Every structure is written in C-alpha cells, then in structure tokens.
Image 1 (tube, rainbow, N blue to C red):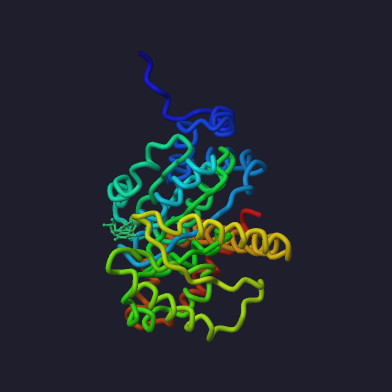
Image 2 (image 1 turned 60 degrees about the vertical axis):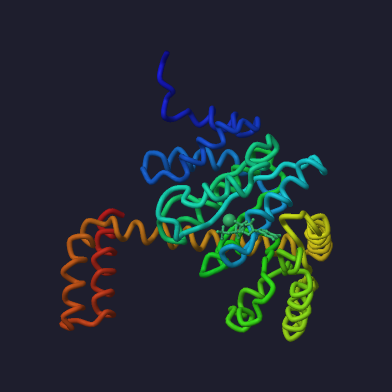
Length: 337
Ligand SMILES: Nc1nc2c(ncn2[C@@H]2O[C@H](COP(=O)(O)OP(=O)(O)OP(=O)(O)O)[C@@H](O)[C@H]2O)c(=O)[nH]1
Ligand SMILES: [Mg+2]
C-alpha cells in the first residue's frame, strides 16, 4: 500500500471541496492552519479558487461566558437545521487561549454528539495557539472553504471573555449572545461593547426551577437594551429565553436569524456590512503581511535585540528606536527596488 501523500495538488483540493468531499475540506483546512511557508502558498491558491463559490451561507457567531451552553445550543440548533429543515451546517470555534490543538474539541464532541456524526454537519475546532489575529484569519478562511464546500450555515463559537467576540463579529452576519439567569452582577460587569454588537440575547437554561429567574433576567436585559440608541441598521435585538438541553425555543431563535437576514437584505445593510468586513480583512491582511515582512528582514533582525536592550536601559526612547528600525527596513527596500 502506498502512503497517502501529505499534500494534494491545488486541483485535487479544489475539486474535492467543490464536490463537498469532507476529507478534502478537512485537509485544506489543515493546510490553512499550517505555518510552513510552502503550505501557505498552496493554501492561498486553493482559497483563491474557492472564493467565487463562497459567501452564500448564513454566518452566525455564538458567544457567551464559559459554560453558558454554547456547544449544547449549537447542537440543538444545528440538528434542528439538518433534521427538520434539510440544511447543512459547519461549526467552527475561536479559542485563542487554547494551548493545544483541539483543546476544546473533547468537550465539544460530547456536547455535539449528534451533530458530530451528522453527515449534513461539519465540525472543526479552533486552530491551536497563536495570537488572536492569526487564529481569526484562519477561521475566516476556513469559513470560506466551508461555504465553497456547500455548507449553507456557518456557526462560529467563541468564549465571551475577551477580545475574540470582536474578531468573530467582524466575520459573521448575526451575533448571538447566550446568557444565564442570575447574572445581574454580570450585566453590570459586562462590557457595554458586547451588548452593543449583539443581534439577539438568549437567556439559556430556562428549564426546571430556572424558568422564573430566566424570565426575570430577560426583562432586565430588555430594559438594559432600551437604554441604547436604536441601531442604524433598523434591527431591534430581541431578548428571549431558551433551553438548549430541552430544545425549547430553538426554532424561534432560528426564525429571528432568518427575519434579521431578510431585513438586512431588504434595507441594504447586508451588502454594506459584508463590504465593510471585506475592507477590514484587507486592512488586517495588509498589516499582518507588513509585520511579517518587517520581522523577517535580516537587517531588522540583526538589530532588534540590541535596540530592545537600549530601550530597556533607557539609552534611547521607544520612538527613536522604532524610527531607526523602520529606517533600516526601508533602506533594504530601496536597495532591492
Ligand atoms: N439545565 C440546562 N443545562 C444546560 C443547558 N445548556 C447547556 N447546559 C449544560 O451546561 C453545561 C455547559 O454546556 P456547554 O454547551 O459545554 O457550554 P459552553 O458554553 O459551550 O462551554 P465552553 O465551551 O466550555 O465555554 C453542560 O453541562 C450542559 O449540559 C440548558 O439549556 N439547560
Ligand atoms: Mg463549548
């Protein structure tokens, strides 16, 4: 038996993805996550060819504090879509804090038991480590590949404890915040920014003895949202209760996502937001490219450590040091031009 080649050709990846072949899709994502320069060239070629086939899915971000029930909710919503609506779903996650590859997949596989074995669903955990910018870029590219492979809905799960919500907001059409009852203190501590970018708040675990507190929390959040100026896109974020585990109000939440989509498409905000996102990705890709090139530059690398020492010792200011390094970088550029 011959060993499976580590890499396929661009055609093989692209044909596989466009035919909805999960193995090809999974291997292309591995390519995207690889840090080898050789892989990133190949990944870029595959992505370029897939791009014309991407963009048609409903992209939703799902955030909430650890344990809010994000994975359980995605399992409920995902299977609702695949089983009752004949839809396809790709589930990705952003977890920059996860130190090892797939750190959270163990939990997710058990929380998403049915979805994990559903042939209409594709689940991919967060790429390992690295800074948020890199993780977010890879997730974005993965999302595009999933769309090219025919997944009509893409859900991105992220833990709502830090910066990752903003990164996810910049790649999805709809942003859903899962909350828990009895989180009145949390409401005060919660960053206003997160509430402001939320399209729907769902108070989860509204089951058993928790129903009443959930209703109370719903009213609290409703009045909190009322204090915000109304959104320019004309959408008033609903606050609802649900039970992911009992699958209650899952269909209602999906209907809200569809209503939002319809409104955004009719008032032009869908296009506008996708356009803004594309520009933001361009900006981020440019900055990331520049940074990479700068840090790879031999002249810069030669000097970087000693310049750092000088700054630490107070012999030169940070600003002057930065100017010197940039001058070094530019000098090399002018030689090669
Ligand atoms: N009673 C009840 N428990 C729930 C519900 N949804 C989730 N849980 C439970 O809450 C716990 C956490 O659920 P997860 O789905 O793993 O939560 P998560 O937000 O994905 O957690 P992280 O990924 O670790 O941030 C599990 O024990 C679930 O069974 C619900 O609607 N009702
Ligand atoms: Mg989870």
